[in-house]
Image 1: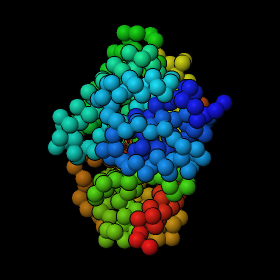
Image 2 (image 1 turned 90 degrees about the vertical axis):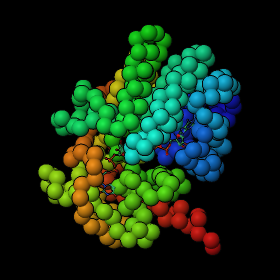
Image 3 (image 1 turned 90 degrees about the horizontal axis):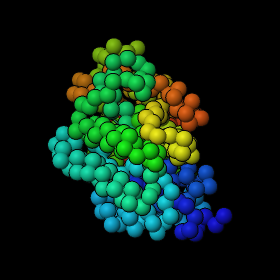
Length: 345
Ligand code: NAD
Ligand code: WQD
């Protein structure tokens, strides 16, 4: 089949030039499907499109646009013969969402609403949604299964919950919809080519991007937020998942959408790693130092959070394959490759 033809059914990736979307594009292409990226570039760069083309080995279709632009969405869905949407577009900074809640409700919730209307108009009713473990709020039991009570501790989390509710209502109203809500734990790492990865603006909030900047000498030290948690070494525990494993989970979900009405599925490893364990693994596999100091707990942080990923194995035939060491190695390769690209000589 000629995968470059616009007649070939395609998978639309909203937020496709972002951190997770770009990795999904590679896995979608590897699975023999045609990715089409749709992004307004508010938190990613156009250069990702060319780099994806070089990883995949052929040009990748890109539409610059906003998910709130219903006319452009409808045109894109029709012109590219879209058969399913993977919906990643959204704002994701927890702290910023507290400062600018309306921007988050508009972009994430209104944006999803407009996109669903456009999909319905075009008869495209298959969707995989980027949800988050944030919908579980403060964990009441570990590991977290999909039946864990849902709550939100930030406007960002509220928007993810609201979208999940919107999708459930839609599913009840019309059985032609096929919906999968993937709840990610902590995605980190990068593609092994070093060409795509996480590229946050300004000072990173998340652990791995900050570790990278400290290892690269851009920041003096890492603040470890809390050394007095009731965990083996006193630091917070999370379920870090390699972004390429996460991407493969989306392809598995897209391929099984026909058998689903509306299902929520965790994507995680099932294994908790503490801040100090992650820092130790990073130093060991990459042979670099990550100077760090213990600080007070960060407000809003939970002690431990990790997935029960057994439903993903059962429903998607998917499980993670990459280790914390792989995450550290691939993230560092990406950091060094992007530093080399931006250096003047
Ligand atoms: P990202 O910011 O790198 O990617 C999101 C992309 O969406 C960006 O390229 C941005 O330009 C685009 N975008 C935002 N609003 C848009 C709009 N209105 N129209 C079109 N494009 C728009 O973030 P990411 O880490 O790749 O996250 C992707 C999705 O996964 C998000 O929905 C996020 O909430 C969800 N998620 C991320 C994490 C994480 O830790 N990274 C965890 C759980 C869930
Ligand atoms: C991980 C651990 C910190 C930075 C967030 C969102 C969540 C989801 C993923 C989207 C914690 C510690 C961190 C630092 C540190 N996103 N840490 N020093 O908070 O688990 O989850 O991203 O849905 O909604 O809340 O991820 O990477 O910020 O923190 O000690 O400089 O690292 O305290 O224990 P978090 P994180």
